[in-house]
Image (cartoon, rainbow, N blue to C red; front, side, top):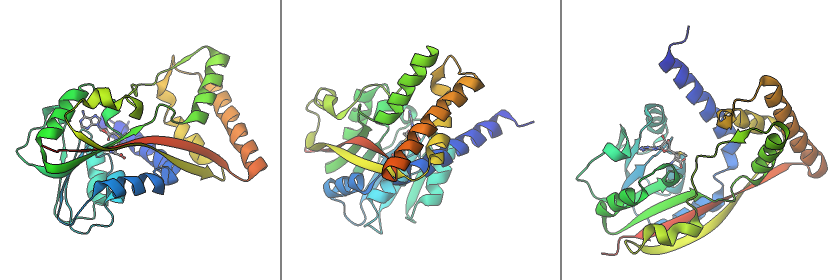
Length: 264
Ligand SMILES: C[S@@+](CC[C@H](N)C(=O)[O-])C[C@H]1O[C@@H](n2cnc3c(N)ncnc32)[C@H](O)[C@@H]1O
């Protein structure tokens, strides 16, 4: 019998693999280009990555630098282990901790909040914390899912809802690039607030279907096997007919990229 913690870890790893396979091109070059353009990075800078996940996003954005001092925190120990494996910098630190219970005296040149702010309830408190730990002229890079994220997935979910009168729980909140001025007030000097598009193209359905499996827990009440299989079949047909018609299935993702400078 699998013990609970092993089971959780197993599920987490599966989810990550499925997401990583599907989103291989998802964090497309356009996003990183934008982040790099406004990062104004330099060798030796101290970088703090809050909710680092597996670090993929930030390491890609930093790839032109060889001597960054990286510090990543995430409340998930499994994520921290992945980040350690992936991190290219020898002078690095990692900590599995919740941002709300984390305290430090350190100051940083760059702080990242990549695809994480929407998950945090106390957004003002987090940004006050960020401001406190940014050196003068330090920059905070925030990326967010746009509210127009995953349009095709939403169509499919609508189909599912119509068929089975079930709900789909989206716990991502509604922090989007459109709402940033009221969120950040005048605490920071905005350098840029921009919506960036990234495309993925698939030549087969399986990565997307595997990814959707990881979203199954969001459907309430739980779909039966029959309902879920019908859903997957519907999606598969949609993807395959697109591949047949145009040679690929494509999906556009949109991100908000915000860069704020600590002017004071
Ligand atoms: C969507 S992932 C983004 C990961 C990474 N920054 C990226 O862009 O690929 C969000 C991450 O935030 C972490 N997270 C969520 N709430 C957190 C909290 N209160 N304290 C620390 N980490 C948190 C999650 O564990 C997860 O790894």
